Image 1 (cartoon, rainbow, N blue to C red):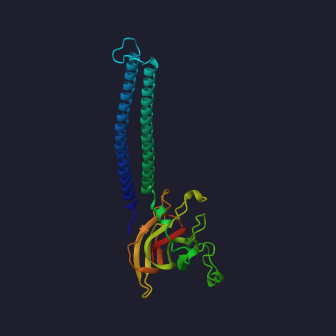
Image 2 (cartoon, rainbow, N blue to C red):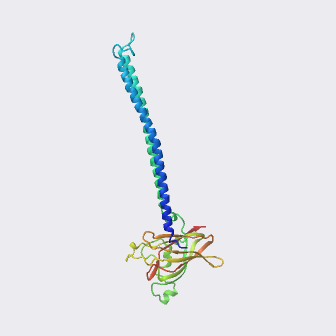
Image 3 (cartoon, rainbow, N blue to C red):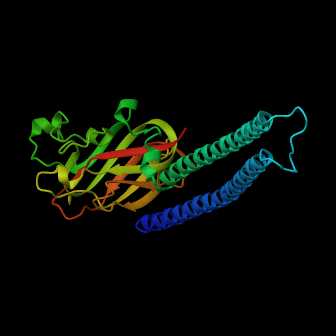
Length: 304
């Protein structure tokens, strides 16, 4: 399976989802803003009406205190302070209504602000989730090729970097300087890898559990961490096989290419298989132009 076209498709899908989310967010904001503007305009009109009413009542009360007023003429026993007391009562009533309306208006403004903040937080969360890399999701899964869980490299066919003597060969120290088990360790420091001469190698590993493999991930060190600022020793074309436990027959899980690009040091490959495997065989066929190949970190994910 060649995954060289998958990044561009993934980027397109990400852009489309991001556009739809932003469109939905701004549409919701505009709709809510329009509704709140209508409510604010209505409250403003009521406030203006109350102000006019208050002003009118003040004028009428002032007229009623003038001598010879026919509308609020003073009856026997009535005095000027009575009219003034009525004016204060009206003013108090109108002021209380204004305060109540303003209080409701402030509540509506606070609710609108809270709604905007909540919508913005949800939109930012969805936006970040849609743009997050697939690697971030994979990191929450169990890596069954981890040495800490019991995974092991059980066989290696590759040319060692250094010339070995007869004693190193007999004692199994062919790759003592850069052992194959480094591929199962998450340390991405320079030199913490399995290195061999040339570009071809066959490596068999036993996973921690028998699983249905669905994802294989490879991570290579960044060139900024290397002494000569070069990562041409990264693998390029490789095949992965699952070994049936009963027949020892190999089943091809995929043929992939590791694209040696700066911004994608970790790359994932999907596996379409429903068979349980505990033993996998990695066949590396080429690298990116170096005389030797360095393998840093392999992860295998699946379901038990």
